Image: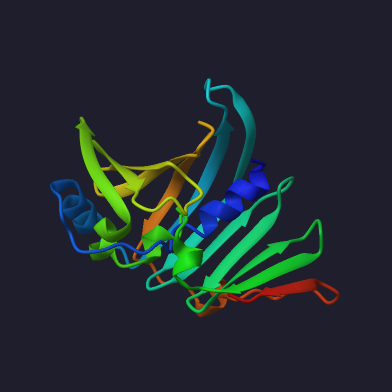
Length: 209
């Protein structure tokens, strides 16, 4: 899985739907996520193979506004922009001068970093949630109930009340680890952040579902 493929999967992840609370872990996670209306951060990403060897690195910025709006912007050399305006998701690849646009429906959201802009009290519909704590950090492990996902396991780690780390493991054992920095929660994010101005000549592919 390449950096760009993984970043696309992650960007389509934070809108993942969730459900009625059925466990202590899910209840606690919902209480951590529910107050977060906006989330802005820089990120550093590493892709690791099943033995823990680092394969690739990338960095960038993300902006989130609930419900359903998200922007994931990756810096060069893996430049990519993924934006959700709450109705559709646009993935723009400047290197290919190509954009893919698809409706934001449940099939799109069955993936892992767009989960944050979904409804926090719906988590157990799609995921089994467990919780562990070490000092001031809390880690939530999410296992998808459906096999129609791009990951086998998703971990969210909070430091205090703030999300600081996300890790996704796929069926091959490859891990994508994302550390967030300079986090700002519940700050104003302009509506324009969730629009994509595509350069003239961009090849636009519209996927119907």
